[in-house]
Amino acid sequence: MKAAYEFADFTSACAIGVKVVHVIRGAVITARSDFDLKTNSEILGFISNGGLENPEYIKTKPWKNDPKNSGIMVDSYNFYSGNTKGYMAYLYQPETKKWLLKSFKKDNPPGGKNLPFKGLKQMLEGEGGAK
Amino acid sequence: MSKDNATCPACGSRDTHRHETIGTAYVTIGPAFTYADVYYLCNSCKEEIDIFNETDQNYQAGQKEAQKKFVQQAIEYLSSNGVGMALFERVFELPTRTLARWKEGNFSSSALSLLHIVITFPWIIKIAEKKFSPELINKGLNIRLKNMARNKDFFQKSWEEYCEHTGKSLPEDIDELRELSLKEDCKIELNPNYSLLVIQKLGFEFSILLPTMKWIIYKAPHDENFITGDNPVVIESGEFNIFNPSFLSIPNTKIFIPVSKNVGLLMTREAKGTIDTDCIIDDKNIANKMNNSLFSNAKKYIYASEKNIKIEELSK
Image (cartoon, rainbow over all chains, first blue to last red; front, side, top):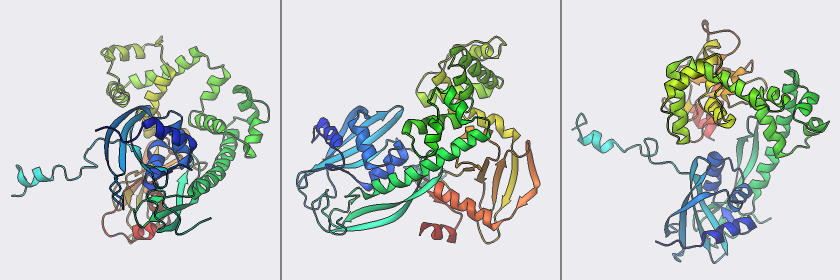
């Protein structure tokens, strides 16, 4: 699938700043913990200043919280900052003419911590598990 | 400033409600600060957004005050350890009275970074005094490499962890490299950044200091259990809130680790390599303090053995 927005349009908007790009609270929290970017301005400054190294388009999907089902799409990308791999997702709301950074966090591959029930089926059905 | 019913930038609805909580954060290797964490919850799209950037302003104001405190403490700490302001200015080629201006609150982000580096790696002052001589840097790094190489397993593991961290491949001649490192006239040309990363990431300084620490056993009071979390180590010193193993070289640094719901270990540098079995402490204030710190340190998860009133109190 093709990206819904031009990546350069988003980074240019980030250069304008918080008047045109809003960062969802959850994204601010993860940007702070994962990338030491503490405020909205720091996040947008980082993006507009070329901080996203090797951005790679992942997918586009509908905005799941869209109350009007107006067909707004969310683009998601992977990027690097040094050795850290990141994930970000954003959308554009034509009604308010604002960009929304929905996600900005470290891209953790699925592992034991974020798939806690990964082995459950095996445990229940497999050898040594409860029959 | 608009409060409730501000327009949601995500969906355009005016059905928004302003929320304000107290957030806590730390400046890098410095004190904690609090700020008013403001966001607007849109009842239509359920997104939470700081529409008017109030949190940004509150955060920056709180951070600035905490940074001022850090700069003052850092300069005073350096002075009390023989690095006066004039010496600092001379070795780093700064104009006179630069540190006095920093101490008064007139400092830049670069100044903060320099202080972070000097506090974390105080020996950098000696290198700066020698005009960052590559020979001296290599000599210092070779001494550290030699110390690492004395333990074969540690040396091997260190390189493996470094390579895993950086995505580089393990040197094929690692045994040869170790032998070479142990020679008296060892002069491996090292990239300073590369080697510093190895040393820092592997907690090398931490590991050699461990046997020199005094270990104290804390027992939780009968009506209180230790909690733990996804960041289960509390590090504190008389001077700073320090989250870096390198700081173990600073006297009075204390490290607390809960090992079960009833027992915690505290390491200090007060005496050498002893487990003080006479020092089993059952102190409600300390248990409370450590639990509070563990709660604040946690990034996402807190663990407790059972229904824990303390967690409920802290979560409010």
